Image (cartoon, rainbow, N blue to C red; front, side):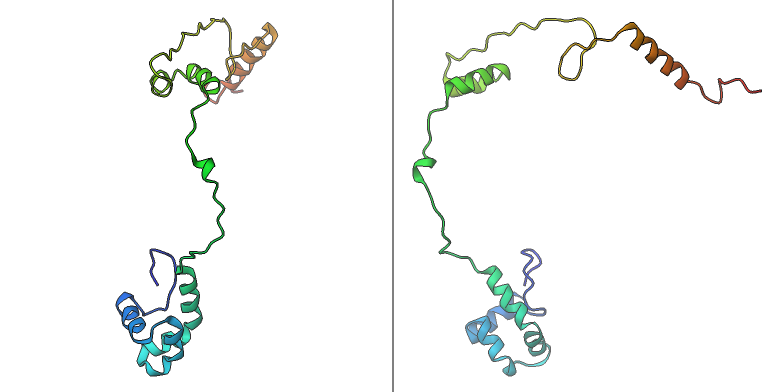
Length: 154
């Protein structure tokens, strides 16, 4: 058991003790089967936590015959899609990356930004506010600014 890998192991059996036991008995199953030969607290822990020791072995075992399907053709590097990436790089102004991917002929043309007056929302769309809406907002601000200090007391 090791706190780093979150596999519990058998309490009281550290790396050194585990190496000695594995060398002497060959496997966790044999250690558990021959626990009557052990002494003291080690014997108690091996017998009490035998199930946990077997689970720990199962958790730590690296499975080598896992059924993995691999399409090697899908791993081959293909040329980047110029018609998809070029407009994106231009929009995001990725000049350096564009030149690395497409070569020195890649050039981001400056996009003219049209200035609009008025209030805009989070996405740059112009919002329309009427004079009635503006008056309501002003009244809300005035009434919200009333407090104990500026309200007349009778």
